[in-house]
Image (tube, rainbow, N blue to C red; front, side, top):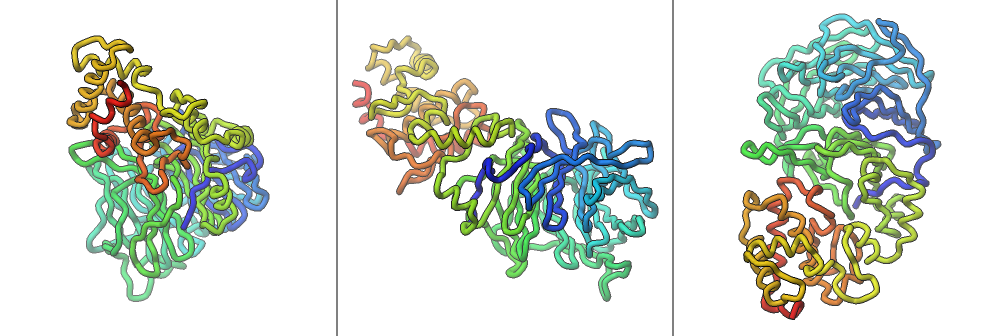
Amino acid sequence: MHYWVRASASDFHGNLPQPRSGHTAVSIGKSKVVVFGGLFDKKFLSDIVVYDIEKKLWFQPECTGSGSDGQVAPSPRAFHIAVAIDCHMFIFGGRLGSNRLGDIWVLDTDVWQWSELTSFGDLPSPRDFAAASAIANRKIVMYGGWDGRKWLSDVFVFDTISLEWTELPVTGSLPPPRCGHTATMVEKRLLVYGGRGGGGPIMGDLWALKGLIEEGILEENETPAWTQLKLPGQPPSPRCGHTVTSEGHILLLFGGHGTGGWLSRYDIYYNDCIVLDRVSAQWKRIPIANEPPAARAYHSLTSIGSRYLLYGGFDGKTTFGDLWWLVPEEDPIAKRWTASPNNVPQDKDAATGNYDVSSRMKESQREQSAVSELQRKLGISVPLSGAGSPIVDELEDKEFIELASSLVRETVSSGGKLSYIQATHALRDHWRKATPSSIQLKELGPLLRDYQRLITRHHFPNGASHIQSFAVSFPGKEAYRFYHIRNIHQLRMDDIPKLLAEYRQLQPDLRSEKELYV
């Protein structure tokens, strides 16, 4: 069992990194995590932010260096590759504005010095959204990417000692060209998963490349060749912009984004955790005991011992700057969650990282009342002094009244209880029979509030004092996914049919509801 736990004030010192996506984060030994570049608010970044694991300290080192044009450090960029070899971080390519980059730099993290490398051999074309991994702590293997005109399926190996690039000749069946995938070395094989392919489809295939060059010699009796793997278990859904993090005998896949199908081109962002178990050679779902962070892609997930550190990412609207731990249940951080399940700030500033960790934690600790917390989370009117319904009544919901009145073509006053019931029944009947395409944007706000009212009445006719968490998992009852959503801006197109399906399941006998109004 694992827990997702939001980082607290006690976890870090120093200045936390700003929100970003499309950055890289590499582990240098067991001492530090080095974050470089990324994108925030349409601005490409070139800063270095370091997490010192032993000191629990975030800091920005003062780097020196030299490049071919006299610059001290690489130009700003996102969607590049970064690979750690000993105390060095190598970066290649990426994007700056609409330009794809093809330069290669190395950062010596012992002295914080950048050097642009003059490489030779089979030089790869400039690209972004490629994926790479280290071979035998000396070489780097890179696969695929996007050069601005086409998706790529080439394989390059870079020798960090001789500074020579070699394009690996691969025979036989080749994976479809792609970008936004992951590439991870597992012993002597390179595993590639997912990505966006030629023409734009999101892929969910898994490939293994054998015959990689190690120490300058091809593996005995193995020529470079790709093999598509079809493993048992429940595989991840097709996606790109995800991460795959290697730890022990497992590969942990998190996040990314896909589409709703070839007829529906809207994006779906993920926050699920799927494990590829190298021992049993199958896909597994990692058991998570609580709600995960917000769905996202183009984030970083770094292994720190038995812990994973999630940072940043993008969900189509928001660039995140939050920091999360994924930890096993015996970890002290997990015990912090089980002791205080309401310690996660959910407001927009917290999601984007623009918050003070210490003050937020103190504020959370002061809020002992579950109903008070519910009021703050949902942004709704909650009568704390009484034992009535914790959701604002329909008679006080002006938008709900206006929408209901429009369906029965009459003006309903607050005193007209019978006509109001008729209007309410007409509106709920409309939502019960509606299809996602027939729901208008202006209807989603009242629908969400009615959804929350029905859940509360369905489970807690005498109030919501027994609510235990804000993922809304009621003791002995089914968990309802959308109860925590404040407004329509937090819904996505693919959420609407799921919301309607849950709403229909919640519909009580409307005749008995008359007792609530008359």
